[in-house]
Amino acid sequence: MKRLLLVGMLLAAAAFGQRGGGGPNPPLASLKTVRPPLPSGLDRYVLDQTALVALGKAFFWDMQAGSDGRTACATCHFHAGADHRVQHQLSGPDAVMNQVLTIQDFPFHKLANTGNNRSAVVSDKRQVAGSMGVVAREFVEVEHGNDTDISRVVAFPSPFMPNGFHVRQVTARNSPSVINAVYNVRNFWDGRASNVFTGATPFGDSDGGLHALVARNGVLEREAVRMENASLASQAVGPVLNSMEMSWAGRNWPQFGRKLLSLPPLARQKVSPTDSVLGAKANPDGNGLLPEWSYGALIRTAFRPEYYSSPEVFEGYTQAENNFALFWGLAIQAYEATLIADDSRVDRFLEGNTGALTALEQQGLNEFRNGGSQCSNCHNGAELTAAGWSVVQRRGRNIGVPGDLGFFRIGVRPIADDIGFGGKDDFGFSLFPSATGNAAGTFKAPGLRNVEFTGPYFHDGGQATLEQVLEFYGRNGDFPDDGNLGPGIGNIRLNQGERNAVVAFLKALSDDRVRFQKAPFDHPSLCVPAGHVELSPGQFETDGSQDGSTALDKWALVPEVGKEGAGAPLQTFEELLRGIGNDGTRANTMTEACRP
Image (tube, rainbow, N blue to C red; front, side, top):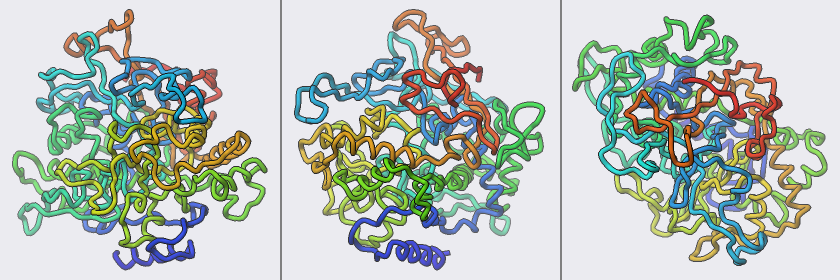
């Protein structure tokens, strides 16, 4: 496996005509020229990779994974791999609970002269367009066959309690797309999802725990997990126990495993019989999968028996329950690794099809990589991000500053608002342990494919449109003081016509399979919370199934889609804000109600 990985790295370097360790930025190229990295040591745990992908897709889309029985990984990543909701999506000191965002709310930092970042500030909202998670509660226990964890009201004050009503918590950063995330050396905006997966947490070698339970010679024993090129697995194990995103506070992995193993997969959701992964297992007469495809059966098909087959109980839980973090991380990683969008019109143009782009789009491509935009300082290589695997591996071990890993300071917010990659992990270790590079205020440069559909933009979600993003760069960021602008930011020269061309190029980066949700981007149905019901401003209708103080959710349907895709293209964020496409000419418009 190590030898294959080394060969893959050398081939990727050769494709760019560069050796690791510096040099000019690698040129743009079709994403088809880069193979995603292979996680090391998979064969130790995995019996059937195809079965693993099926398990991962079920895990990712299953609403039962949330402590409330209504929150899936996909709840924040259902639209081109990102979020597409506008009500109750704000966090931060200036956030208004349950606000419905409009086009007039953007950008969050408004200037008298949009071309001058030192002009008079018209308004500045210290808020983030994040994603709704769960209501703050304390975990008590799971009940066999019940998709809602038993809980109690939190005994501490929560910022998400307007007028004494418990509303869903909202994350402190915008949700990035999971599409093409397999190419990221690190995941999350702050890079805390390590390239090394250790079996239960996102933090790689900071976590020295023994997180696998293996049966050897009839005896169960703990062993360490360590897999390289596995940032997707590191990322996948983060949200499911996070007390803001998916879990009541205090739930652990064996408890989560006990719950999900007692439930039919996707029991509240429709799966298309033509689903590219789950179709053959779909229940044609109801929700979810056929009865024989329990989570236990899916695990037995995907994993080696020494990690699930022991009849013994270990520390109060079965072997499978004890290993659920391992199953979850590796399965979701396998599924997300199939979400590769490498067939945009730009990819085809870079492959030699000169007719794939219009003259305006070709002008935008030239401005992007050669003009005064500076775009390719942070968005380079086939992955269109300096955080991409083939770009980072060119540098070998010469990692001295955050930019070497694709993390930059571009003046989105003051450094003190969010230190990003300059923070520490849950074990107290620096996310970027370097004696020379200051990572405070730096964030991962995202890849740009399908960016047309993944607004709002930046880690704070403070820009609604690609035009606003180009305006932001045209004024060299919003907060230039205190070293808040990295190299290459501050020299951007684009007139209005050149900005229009770059925007046209960015929209040509969309893959039509993503646009129409065709395989591998098809999926089960999903009922997503889309704000809360207010009887009058600040007075919420309560959810009778809770404790009388929890605000009632509104729900929006994301319909199931088979491998041939939907009849209408995805709605952009700007179209969502303006109501364009609500007549059925766009998909995922958040206008069709559902009951979870």
